[in-house]
Length: 189
Image 1 (cartoon, rainbow, N blue to C red):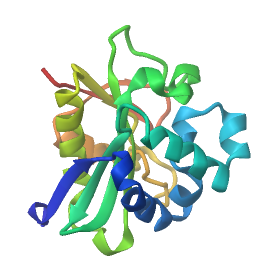
Image 2 (image 1 turned 90 degrees about the vertical axis):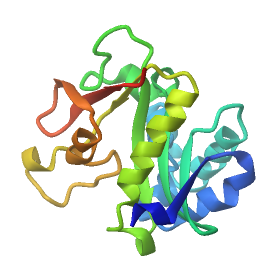
Image 3 (image 1 turned 45 degrees about the vertical axis):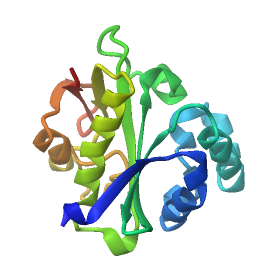
Image 4 (image 1 turned 45 degrees about the horizontal axis):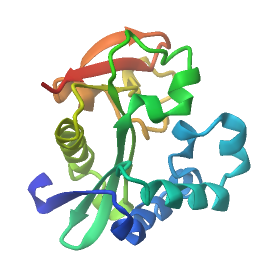
């Protein structure tokens, strides 16, 4: 039940909770969302402890890089959300190149700890990420989910979220340059 969860910005005082979420995920443990922020060579060189250290410096910055979902006081999940302009990967990506010149925010990563999976937490994280971005000035949100129906393998990693989750939340597909990775958008205001 999603109402069992509460949601807070991923601020420096919650660093231990953020790390608990990432550490419960084999890819997240080493990536720390550096994939989206850093040039590929830096991201790969930092795999593991380097990305962990880099992420700690991001969290102590002036803007929270995402939100956390909690069940009571236990951290259950993460959603990365920030202005598109801060993501180096998106600046360089042809498949995810800008659709237009609007200053959109991007939702790029979900991690749900094992004990909280299959309880609607990712969908609730998405809802609260939209609210967080809107409250922080976003006029439009963009995401790059996985279209599982178009994917050759059902074992696809869903860190960017499933297309169906975004469509159910009111996002609309605005471009598709890869068969299984559309760009979806939601107007915030």
